Amino acid sequence: MASQRGGGLVQRRGNNVRTDDTNSSEQQEDLSGYPDEEEEHDSKETRLTLMEEILLLGLKDREGYTSFWNDCISSGLRGCILIELGLRGRVELEKAGMRRRSLLNRKILLKNPAPTGDVLLDEALKHIKETEPAETVQSWIEYLSGETWNPLKLRYQLRNVRERLAKNLVEKGVCTTEKQNFLLFDMTTHPLTDSNMKQKLIKKVQESVLSRWTNNAHRMEKRMLALIYLAHSSDVLENAFAPLSDDDYEIAMKRVRELLDLDFDQESMKEGTNDVLWAVVAAFSK
Image 1 (cartoon, one colour):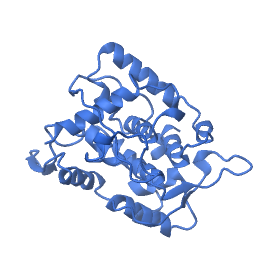
Image 2 (cartoon, one colour):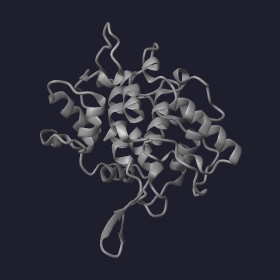
Image 3 (cartoon, helix red, strand yellow):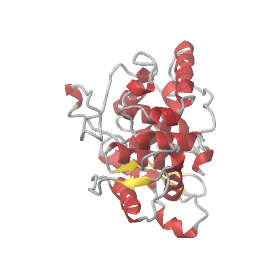
């Protein structure tokens, strides 16, 4: 279940990721979808969705697959889908009302049915559009993951999400496709072909909690804030922090703990925030 994910900070493992000195950020799609604080030189770079970034952090560079022991990334990717829809202005959370209902008790509502151009996002958007009555964020994470006891809701499951996202990364020139034999079965893998893209992503995550740390979640760029929370919930944040020195690693983890300890309902009430983002974070941190 989604409420059982992300139970604690991951422990540090071996240094198996390299970084470079190149910085990267996303290109703005529209006012509700992407940040407005980008630099000119980023405008022509390949833009990844939150789902693709999480998968890229989780992929082993040479092997081209995620850890067999990671049972969190599946629901984490579904959370990314909901946040993407929220940031792109396609869905919103119902109003808190006079009694200030909590994030987990508020339903996701369709805001704009226009397609996003991303197959996974549009598939999820179609399910939300056709569902009456509306459902909570936590319910949608379970439905999209296929982790529901209600057989009538199994039709909402998004299938082969990791493979479909990996194919997106192949199309964007980040990965390639290979076949590997694992004794009893063959598996399609997606080793990295463009290490620069991943190193830029890792650098960006590191800087967000080190040199560019604001000590205020409300001042952080929404997509980066979502990436940190969902990378933690998907158990891939360690892959971005592993190359850090011991001192920087300790600082980075301390600041992630500060984000995890926030009152998400209070944060969602601040001006300019995105309710869907905070509702997804609350669902994984319950």
